[in-house]
Amino acid sequence: MKQTYVLHFVQEQLSLEMEEGTTVMNALKAANIFLDAPCGGKGTCHKCLVQISSDSVSWKTVKACQTKISSSLYIDTAKSKRKHRILTEAAARSVPYLPSAKISEELHCYLVAFDIGTTTIASYLLDGHTGKQLGTASCVNPQAAYGADVISRADYTIHHGFDDLTGCVRKAINDLLQELAHAASIQVEEILQICLVGNTCMHHIFFQYPMNSLVLAPYVPYQKGLIKGKAADFQIHIHPKGELIFLPVIAGFVGADTMGCLLAVRPDLKKEITLMIDIGTNGELVLGNKDGLVCCSTAAGPAFEGAKIECGMRGAEGAIDHVSWDEEGFRFSVIGNRTPKGICGSGLIDAIACLRKQGLIDETGHMLSCQEAAEVYGAEIAAHMIQKKNMTAFLFDPQAPQVYLTQKDVREVQLAKGAVSAGILLLEKHLGITHEDIQRIYIAGAFGNYMNPENACNIGLLPAVLKDRIQSIGNAAGEGAKIALLNKEELAETVRLAQQVEFLELAAIPEFQDCFVDELEF
Image (cartoon, rainbow, N blue to C red; front, side):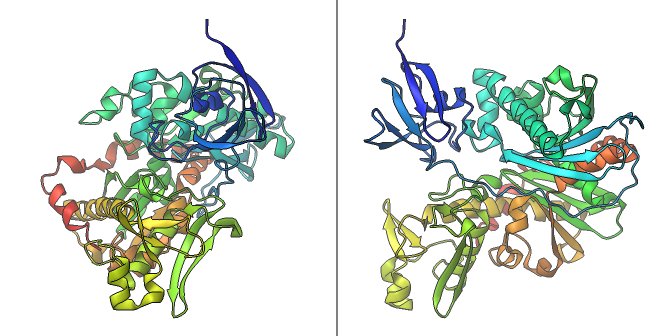
């Protein structure tokens, strides 16, 4: 029989007994403490660092996923847990209040919309009698402890089953319901209906649908249609007869979150041709107008969410979120006005655009070495160019050596931006149009909300000719989930849209690879 040891979690003021040989990461999960682990626990991302001590005096920093318990420990997660900037606002679209929920005039009743993102979960409390929004609540998706992207999480369920990932996201939903109810001084039992949106992987994990067909070509979802069921059947605690709705999925990697965005924008009702882009840990694109819509998915997001970037992190306190350059040198801002701890997606776009503009990165993505920079730009600029792990890197502030951008990071951004811009071109080709035919680009999601559109165009992520036609629409997926609760006719429209939006599988298009390679250059 294995020895058990007592673990003291310092920040959480919690103690727990765990078996010898358990990793610190799994002990944290058992205590409902979920740290970011973009690599899925393989020990390669260095993002799940914690401090451990046997006496609470002498501490050492270790990777939680690689450290096994062999004695009683104090565990401090302070360096890994940060306050995240979670987007809940969106460009509102007004619809008549015609709910599908059976509203009683005599009783208080409420509705809640959820956007289950790969990175974060946002929720919205609505008054059942008026449809008025009463509050919001959000959290980091605890599934982040099992990997940054949908493929790593799908792979986890295939090898370990659904209980861990399904259980933690359902608990997060219940916790948010309690938080909303407490803030509004209501009872969760007064919530009659909830509507969820999320990408196809989040959808399949929530319902525990088989993943094999989703992760293997041709990437077909196990289930796509509009789902209505009793919330209690999925361990969601609202009114005993409360209803759960999950909007339809469009394709393998174009999920109900994209359907939510469609409800928020309704490009199918517009004469003008629009391009809607939602770049999260995956990138979904929808192009067209009332005459037809075509969509695709691109593997774009992990770099913009901080995964695979040496000093990358999400939009949390300590993240460099914007970078600029003037005659006095490089400048940057940090979320929370703190000492920089890393760089998030919006800062990444700015940084590369600035380096490209100053000639420190050429059109192929090559980063100048310190010697090359000194020869062309002088010692002051060259002081930013250093060597890290046998490659050139850009140091944001020579006085703060902990945050830098490597040549490999630049290549990761090239892969992401190449995938998005190739997707745009192939959607246009499918419809027989060009960049100039697009009247409006709608950018959904947190990354798009904080991104500098001009810099996104300068590096080729978005078409430069459309720079003045870009509009950020915030958390459009969450807005769509609200609209589905507010108006039963809009909810019914999701079934039609799911059938009518044409899906383009980029990997199956012969010219995709050539187009992708062409779009890698800045």
